[in-house]
Length: 257
Image (tube, rainbow, N blue to C red):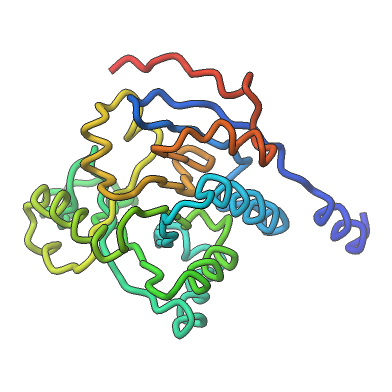
């Protein structure tokens, strides 16, 4: 196959859209939109961004919900994607924060035992997850989303309050769970969620984790897809944007906890 033919074939690739419901308590709704991989092949990223932008617009409707963007740094050292943050710093105005998995062990430094007793060449556990908040206006958030879509890093929220108020809520919820004082100096604490985090959880837990966020949309490498957690029933928006129909949105079996 010639290089020209390879380029043509790459540009003709399309995503196959489907979604399945995740079991969560009302008033929450959760869906996983499957992807072939995350980070996503670069030729497919514009389609992903276009489809998800349409989905968020339909979910938002005519409401006053505020769009805000975060980037999780875990995957951004692949292919030098992290350099885009510095290159767009003036437009995006990035603020550094700490991502916290509220259903997992809180961040802590490596112990002496972890350093000395691990098997040869065994990787150390990640002791922290850095997040970047795009603190620019909505045009800056949209530009960051378009630029970073498909890298496995993008998290979009539709907020009932300002991002600063959301950060205050998240800090009040997450910081008390962290005993290691090394991690007490961040101004931003952000909840990281996956399908495993939310499946079968009490609605009160989700309310506490998400505060004033009405919609949580995350590129989730752990789930090989887009996690959508929303107080707004997304079924109509998923149908309207061609992501899923009623059949594919049938609930999955409840997990055994």
